[in-house]
Image (tube, rainbow, N blue to C red; front, side):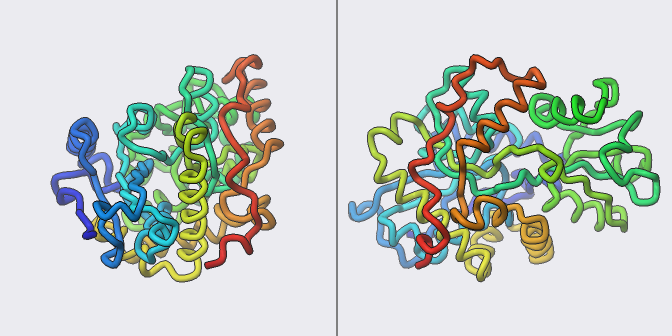
Length: 361
């Protein structure tokens, strides 16, 4: 198979760091590709056998954003033939600002989706038959960022500050922050994935992935922002999860297991030597520079986003029932979920927690 690259990013959105300038084009191109049922992007090893031979099971995986280091393990599993070794012909379809992964998953346009735990529970509340089968990120990389030297060094210093946040934040981390640190809704500003307003105004606070926005801020503003990582202060959301339809999990657990195992092996391989995966990331997203990828990898390691906590002993992708219960109870206490939601239906532990040694090639 050959790698089919997406349209030029002068026509399509470039990614989180340059979203605002290209957002309308990205949304249109992404949704048109999804509706057409075509592959928005396909990553594959040149050495992989053709899918038409019937030797491999064709699988489509939808990511949450444009290709970047935060997706590296999945691209690595393609680039190094790990998916192929597990009998899989994997197509990676990039997400974007208005690509609805839940809709694509439920419609069968993709077989697996990159998600996060709070949305998985919300899906159960809304009656979506989807289930999370692995959690690559043990910590949510979402942080708040402030200017240095303005007196904001902790979450307790946020009183009275305007905080720029995306719409999704209103039902994810904002209820957590508001309740824990006595913040008020009037502090919420609008974040449109453009760091310009934050760079220009020292009084603003802004959300951002520690692997992404700080890089743009350093380049545009010439300073390193103060980072407040919510995951280190009780926000226990799993992210970069692998979701699938419950019907697929129940009818073909072997396929699900092979995809999970191969993806986890891809992540171990990527953290050891990211060069193969990076080549595919940059082929898929030509605007993703070596410096940006290196920055993302550095932060993933520095903050223990992937290998920390349960993942240290249970392996990358680890999940526990206790952690899901903790997250759910926290969100119930904050009024984000009703206590009657059967949150246990949002995940399955059957495919993970084998220990690091099980994922060695």
